Length: 433
Image (cartoon, rainbow, N blue to C red; front, side, top):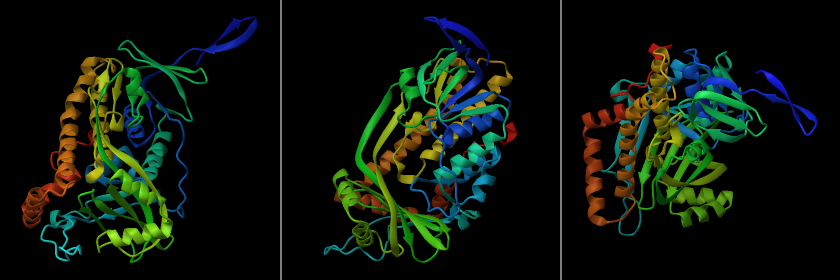
């Protein structure tokens, strides 16, 4: 970066020319770091900006509260980017089975022991070792950042606070709070659901509040590391169990409890032991014995979908473009599908000598992703509206449907393949490396 001397009120100051890159990525989380990896590995000069670095990983640390269920397709993408090897060196938990059912009760209130409405997905039925992996978000992010460190085409600016942004096909620009300026052909907004890039670009949202909240908790359990994740539907929202990797000889799980805001508020106010007692009393009998609550938190559930994914010189990816109901844990997997599609479009445009921030280039990405994202959103909405009520005729229909689904092995296998990203997936950058 070249510097020039400037005189203001008789004082000599240094003013730096703007640093130029081909792409500026705002947000160094899982999606932003993955995009930077994919582009940087193809000799595209990238700068990544984030507010804070994640805490360093220590093997004896308790599992984080924020985890994701990574699909087979996401695994392949992360392997092709070179990050998976570092994730394996840290920790992850494979899950081989997944059970889904609706809680049914006898007139006295006791839950039915037998479940004709249960559907069980088992990876062995499609000749796979597992359906996916439960991985702490920090583990995935740290592994991608470690991959970035090895690329001389990518620079990470962190901590960085962005003061201003402007976007155009001729060139986009950001200014940091410390006065440094950066220009690029394209700015990628991967800065999450409350995206400042989206806001500054003037891109509007289709927003829907689900009138539910999600409580997540990390608990210590008995019985060793589990290989199953399950979800029991109730009229106030699902009750879910996600296995976590054993750490220091102890076993853990992530509890996901969807409920009405007033119920979540009550649960958050309980003492640790009161919360464990309530959890044990309310959750299905499959819940392993809980010996300790380590951490809990909650967040509101909302659907967001950008009315457009791009404008001249700027494009959105991941949660900046869309957030969905987390019923099936597909949020981060949709984000990684964005990564694969956007990287493919930009790499091909770069090779062809096209302007990366042009409307013609960015339109290809939106065409590749909007329909798939919309389909997943609609599917999760259908599940949410179908199960979040106690209307008796609808309850009967949905339980017949669950029972039939569980008894129809070919259908179950196809659902597994679709959820894993095996069926109809293009999420691979292997041929680009």
